[in-house]
Image: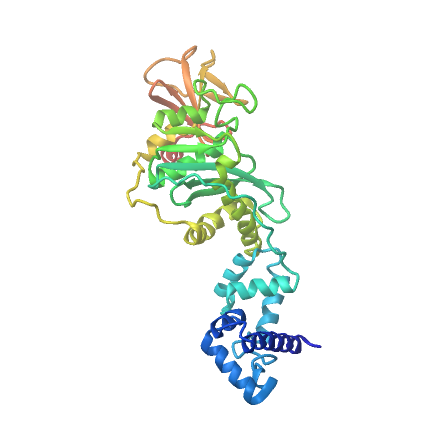
Length: 394
């Protein structure tokens, strides 16, 4: 017995049972209709059809007949072939977006998901655990930023890299994202400099308790808010509150965002044939982030912005590593394995034994200051930058 015949038999048997109970007076016509999932009027029509034509009057002419809205078999084959050949491993929502955008597909997401489940290409999602209440978002953009890194094999065939992301709490807009070999102080400053230059200063920054963000005297204990890291010093200078997270759950918004990025961004980079960090960062900035924010960002609860404009040149001098050094007798400074030679100065004969401050910028360049006065700038190899190069670096 095929499924169509079985459904017909079940339907007829149930109707005969309910009809006999109605005929014996055990059920009213309204109650009989409710048991069959129909109105009183529809039950009366079924009774009349049964009295006139018997069981044949109850046959549903739609069963066993293909729906006129049925998706053509060629479209089903195309969709399954595309998933197997080019999109295997993608989540269904992401895959469906590309079907619509890149392949002119007009069938719905639910149908695609059902067919992928039926074909065994996608596993059904596991049931979620107990409901947890989310922390309410900030009402205005710029009130709080999240910054975090995620280590993952973002580029096919390449070692794992860290993706550094700076995101708005109110809207989930990603303002900055780029790949680096290892997360640290320099990557933190690079992300903050990019966001603060484009948007302005935020009210607070929410991060994990990584050693470049906070000093934590005891493992898994509270952070030391008096002993500041380079990042803590810069944020305090700018008047930005630095908030530590004490559990992965506390950073749930960032964790969920990284789950989305690991699922989507790595596949987009592979699909675009991107294989090196420089090209990947350009693709992320110019192609991926605009599409991601259009898809996942949401409007803030209040339209006002909490960002405060800041001078880019000033930001560059604050969002950098700053260390004090004593000038040697040969008018040089030892820093990070380099020997920085100070140039002649019209202000004094030499700076021997003077206390100077070395600033290491996120782009790898260096500068030496005596008080507020710039003495010299250097490239990443410790060579002095002069002439046109100095104007470009200023």
